Length: 295
Ligand code: GGG
Image (cartoon, rainbow, N blue to C red; front, side, top):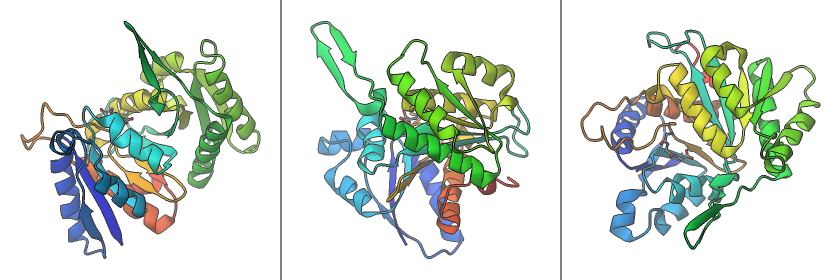
C-alpha cells in the first residue's frame, strides 16, 4: 500500500521521521511517498499546498500528515475539505506511565471537519473583517451519526454534544437539533448536551462525566487541545480525519516552531497517529479504545 506522507512544518519533520522509522521496523508492505506542504513550501513555491502534493493526496486513500504551521488554513484545513474527511477523531486517553491530571480518563472528541468558521469565508470591509459560520443539517447529522456509530462500535455509553445554541441560535441550533434527531436512533446510548463554555468547566473539574464528545469544527479544535491537556498534553495526542474515500492521519499538535530542530519534540502523538492508521486498515474503522489498549 502507498501512503502519501506530508511532514509539513516545524516539528512535523522530526516526529514523522520517528514514526516512519518504527513503521519500517515493522516490516509491513508499505510504500512512502513524501510531499511538501506548509510555510516552507509557501516560501519556495508560492503555494502552501503545492499542486503536486494536492494531486498526490487526492489519489491516495491514506495520507500521513506531520504538522501545520502558520499556513494551517491553506494546508491541513484545506486538505480535510478537499478530501472530505469529515470526521476528526481525537482520543484523549490517559496512558500508563505518563503523569497526568486524570488517570484512567478515556474520552474521544469527534469534531466536524468540513464547515463552521473554518470554511474560510472571511472578508475585509474597510477597517473591519467578517467571518461567515456555515453549519448545515447534512454535515451535522453526518458527524452526529459518526459519533454514535463510534460509541456503538466501542461499547461506549454516552455521547455529549457541545454547542452554543443559546447565542448562535441559527448555526448551533441546526447542529443541536441534528444531534438530538440522530440520538433518537440510538436508544442504547445515553445522549446529553452542554453549552461549550460550561463543558470547558466540567472538563477541568470532572472530566469523567464525558465519554464521546461531538461538536462543531472550531469548538472541536479548541476542546481537543483541552482534553489532550487532561491526559498529559499534545505530545501524546493522536488523531484521524476520516471520510468515505480518504483518511488523513495527523497528531493533534501543531508545528511548535519554538522547539523544532532541538531534538526534544515528543514523537508519541505521531507514533500513536501511525498506529491509528494501521488499526484502521485492519479493523476498517477507527476504534480509539482498541488502538490505545494497553498503552
Ligand atoms: N492545536 C494544535 C495546533 O496548533 N494544530 C495546528 C492547527 O492549527 N491546525 C488546524 C486545525 O486543526 O484545524
